[in-house]
Image 1 (cartoon, rainbow, N blue to C red):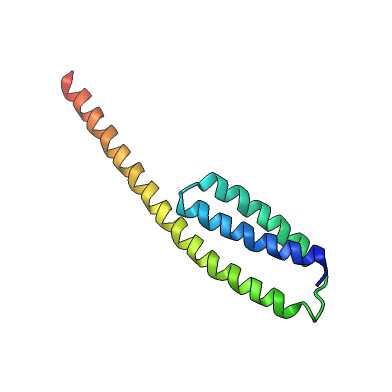
Image 2 (tube, rainbow, N blue to C red):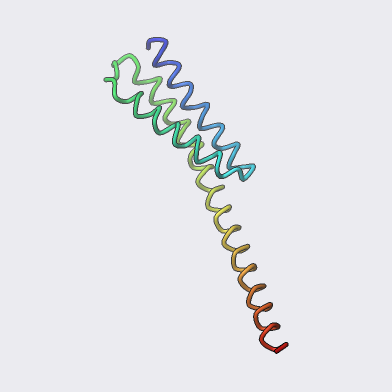
Length: 105
C-alpha cells in the first residue's frame, strides 16, 4: 500500500475514533461535521481500485471502523432518547404554565 492510501486509511480510523469521542461527550455538531469529512475521505479512498495486496489491511481497518460505528450508533440513539425526553419535559412545563395562565384570568 502506498503512503497516500495508508495515510487515508489511518485518517478514516482516526476520524471514527474522534466521532466516538464526540458521541461520548454529546458533542453532536462536531460529530456530524467529522462524519461528513469521513464520508468524503471514504469516497476518495474507494475511488481508486484496490490492489490485491491491500485487501487484508483494508479489511482489518473496516472491521475496526464497523466495531466503533456500532458504539457510535448506540450512543447517538441514547442521546436522541435523552433529547426527546427533555423536549417532552419542556412541553409538559409549557402546558402547566399555559394552564396556570388560563386559570389566573
